[in-house]
Structure formats: structure tokens, C-alpha cells
Length: 231
Image (tube, rainbow, N blue to C red; front, side, top):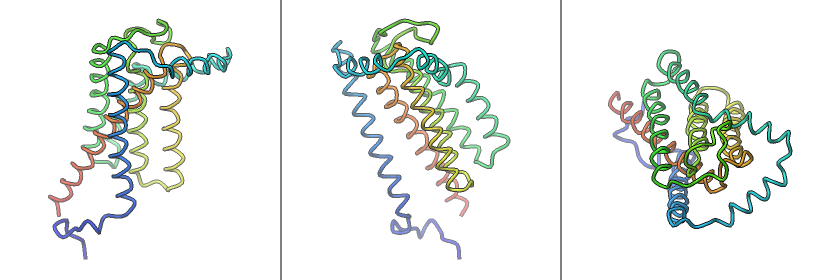
């Protein structure tokens, strides 16, 4: 006998789902709090001790070969790369994937939305970069890091698709971890290249995670309502 959504009780929701829901909400509140706290200080043109500490650590580690590696890694968060990747992913979701067409809609909203949000925030805070390096897309304002926001939303949504796929659990963990690592490496690379402060990157990760979770939650609610109307 199939279960009707009308008779669905809270006790019917798996514990794993509750853990994900609670973790998602905590992440939303944490990222929003972090960004607001940093944003207030940036507007007041305060300096962050953690920026200098992070820069000292990076300078001590930053050998030539590591600098070259970070220069390659940072390209995985560039506007060109993410635009091409987003276009390919959208085409796949629309025409070749087993996912609902709504997934393509929210993925597109995820990518276009974070681009607009990042641009607005950069211009609002108008923070200058530690160094201006056009070779690494290190131009314009600094806060938050656009590479960080873009990488978190793009690779994060791909990780979500992996989790929602039918592949074996072990491969979900493997690919999910690799995609998450890619996003974080792109974010960290911006400090190694000296085009962003640590707080720029942290703010970028916070904003990216916040928007990513908003889009995923909205997608899940849309799919839930669609399935409920069909039962």
C-alpha cells in the first residue's frame, strides 16, 4: 500500500532527513551571522588580525611550485570556466538527465543569482584588494571573493546532484568529497595568489553556501509539492 502525503506524520520522516534539515538550517544561520559580522567591520574599514595571520602562514608556505599550482586551481573558479560548466550542466539537466526539469531551473537560478549577489555586494562594500593582478582575475573590489562564491555554488550544486543520484553510496561519498574539495581549493587559492584577504574568502564561502542552500531547499520544496499533487 502506498503512503499518501495527506496521512504523512512527522514521525514518518527518516532520522537522516531530520539531521540534514537541522544541519542545513544551522549552516544557513551560521553563514548569515558570519557574513553580517564581517560586513559590518568592512564597512567601518576595520582591519582583521586574522587576515594578517593567514597571510603570514600563506607567505611561509608559498613556494614557486605551489604558486603555479594555485594559479591553475584558481581557474576552476573563473567566470569563463564556470559559465561553460554551467551551460553544459544546464543542457544535461534539461535534455539528458533523469532529474526533474525543475532541477535545471533552480540550478540556473543558483548560478545567475550568485553572480548578481556577488556583484551587488562587491560594489556595496567597495573593499580594495591586497594586490591587483589581472592575470589571476584579481581586479575590481575584493569583498566577498567572487571565485569563492561561484565555486561553492557551482561545485556544491553538482555535489547535491551526486547525492540525489542513484549511484552507489560509496561513489556518492567519493565524488561528493572531490567536488567539495575542488570548491574549497579554489577559494583558498585566492589567498595564495594574494588577490584576496582571508576574510574575503570566508565571506565568499559564507555567501555561496547560504545561496546554495536556499536554492536547494526551494528545489526540494518544489519537488515535494509536485509529487504531492500527483498522489
